[in-house]
Length: 165
Image (cartoon, rainbow, N blue to C red; front, side, top):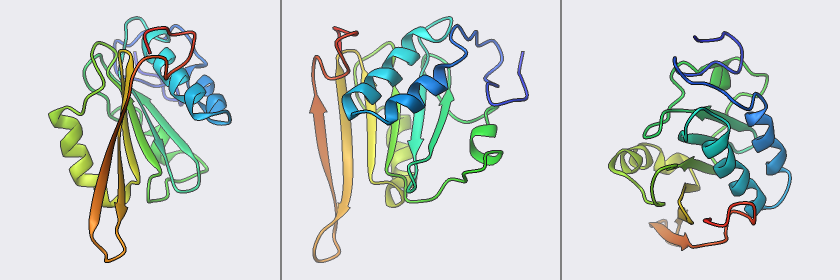
C-alpha cells in the first residue's frame, strides 16, 4: 500500500524502521565512514528484506533518499523526495550513492548507464556492497579534458557494527 507522505515506497515494501531516512540524514552530519555505514545498515535492516537504497547529495548538501527492491532503485512512487520538499535539488550532485544488498560493490550495466547520463552533473558515484565500497570520481583536467578515478575500499570501511563491510 502506498502512502502519500515522504514514507511512500514501492507497493509491497514493508518498512521495519520508520525513521530510516532520518538515520541516514543524521549520519551525514558525522564522518564519511559513519555515513556509508548508516546507508548500508538501513539497506539491510530497515525493511522486510535487503533492498537497494540510494542517496543523492546535491550541491547544497541536501539529501534525496529512496528505496527500491533487492536489485533496482529509483524515485518511482517516491517523487516526494524530489519535488515536494522545501529544498530543491541543485546540480552538480556531489555524490550518488546506492547499495547492492545481495552482492559485491560493482557498477552494474544499469549503474553505468545512469552514470553516463549524469556524469557531467555529478562529482562522484559510489556503490556499497558486501564488504566493499567502490567509487568513481569525475573531474576536469587543467586543459579541459575529462577524467575519472576509480577507488575501491575493502573490509571494515562501513563501520564496526558491520564486520562484513
